[in-house]
Amino acid sequence: MESRTTTTEDPNRPIGLTAPSGIDRAAHHRLDEAWLAAAWSHPSTRVFVVSGGQALVDETPDGRTELLMTPSFEAPLTEEHRYFLGTDTEGIHYFALQKDALPGRMDQPARPAGLREAGLLLSPRDAGLLVHAVALENWQRLHRFCSRCGERTVIAAAGHIRRCQACGAEHYPRTDPAVIMLVTDDEDRALLGRQVHWPEGRFSTLAGFVEPGESIEASVAREVFEEAGVVTGEVEYVASQPWPFPSSLMLGFMARATTSEITVDGEEISEARWFSREDLRTAIETGEILPPAGISIAARLVELWYGKPLPKPLN
Ligand SMILES: [Zn+2]
Image (tube, rainbow, N blue to C red; front, side, top):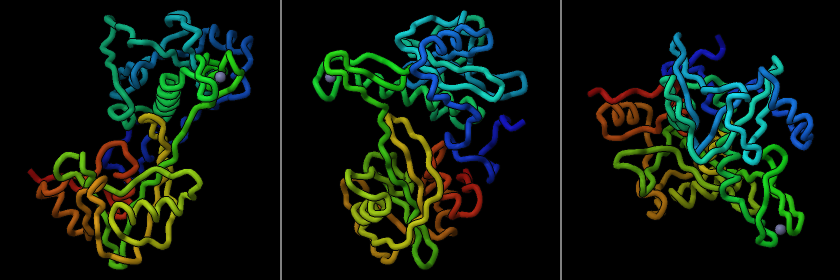
């Protein structure tokens, strides 16, 4: 039952895309072509197609949402874009195939879905498989040429390396660390901001990319000051979330403000405000603001401070 779909009403639900998937990535097999060939052709092996960040999902009779996976003999074989994702505790191997389009499934009510729609519905195993495949797909698509010499690269290591055939350089999947933080002040109010390109009324936590040569603690302080003009002191790590849109790893923090005056940068953040819990409840219930929602760790950081699931608009 651990794969049972959780709802947004469950305060103990795992942070989306962060729960352990139960899959051993078995990285030591990635360069072993004979092992990969045997794993691929094993009758218990399961395969799904990833295309443009989406895969086919299906509803089970008992109401769960699952990745639609097939045995490898039913899968369209394209070794060039075959990603080995790992092996579960029962010895079942999982592969993703990157294709230009998702296969048609006229016989089933399967539908295409990406992580933002399906990430909270899928079991931790399926969400973990899909986030791994989408992250590899995004990286593969954007790294077809060698950053050292400019020649074409080819896929290797079952999707986890791109190798340059001209200069021999090996390129590894890229992950960009980003910090995302809920800042509170000495009255325990939360600082939420509105990015300039967000829909009217949307407020969420501040966030930004870690810069070269910067610690994550320094990045939290810099981003909060740049975006809102607020100085922060103590920083507490909460959790991380893979966010392959296209290649981020969100590092979630609670940060304590030592100043409270707000000066937004006007470029990334158009408005920022301190909210008490009562302020936030009223603002959401009246529809004045839209809180962070969905799968993002931002929603969970706000909830951790709020103490329970966020309220819904009353009308
Ligand atoms: Zn090269």
